[in-house]
Length: 217
Length: 217
Image (tube, rainbow over all chains, first blue to last red):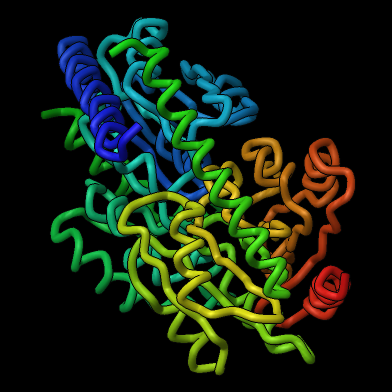
């Protein structure tokens, strides 16, 4: 098979994904759901951040779809907190796609609230595929280093809000905040960058304020 | 297009990758090169680990191929240390593939030594694609958390050696070493797991001993 044919086919898979994502987005909007695609590298603290956010939500029902290649620790943690959460295991795939989310949305029977979709831990592929979300939340960390916006630009470019997590470890790591911010702003003029710590709970009130602003609109 | 047809085409792309990887592997072996595919999440400390390893190599020429989506900081760092390094920018792709490496190997004009191929920071896709290597070295970190083998099994299953990096931060993070090791051993009986720190340089002598054993064979 020619290389052009292969590229054409890969593009058709991509287009189909975007098409279903747009339909899911409309369904969610019509059900009064604001959906947030939560992205970040493995171990960035996506679930920990979700727990801190969910704890602070008032008068809004949170729903969570947990994406993982395997295992369901995070869903169990969220269910134990009384959150309506379901697990998706991709069994190898490196990002969630819109057909998976469309099915999960049907299963969750959502209405009026905010839906967090925790993507696979991966700074690359999740940023390329829409899954029906209204906004993308990126969790980056001070332990990953300040060069991440330069090396993984798409995730930073597409984020609507960026959490800089594990700030409690700042005294122990070499993290150049100015260089990090310069990299972020070269790609993304508007997304707020909020310093947080899942350990000290610093910064999450501000994150929740941002979310509530969006949900109310 | 039917879903079956799409799957068939994706498999053919995959098969072609493996075929070229096998040819590259033979070329490298014939040139006296032992090649190591260096994998890990974004910010795991792959380059920092390479620097510590290269510093300790005696009577063996190190070569490095640096894979990044964008940017070339790491190659500049390695070149400044006198290492023969070249940069590959995938411009978006989430893993290195064998045609890219085959071309880079030609360009580097390698003979007799050890070639480190630093893959894209990603715990998922790099583990799926052979790139001509003789061994896979995985860098995991205590800051990413102890559940990583459970969530990203393939990388841990396929690794020939695992570095547990950032051990200098152990006093400040919740890392359950027993749980981590249980997860690793359920997938991989044999790979040594070596605790290292790019900051204190702990553990790298042991890593280099392992590499030298392989190179001599």
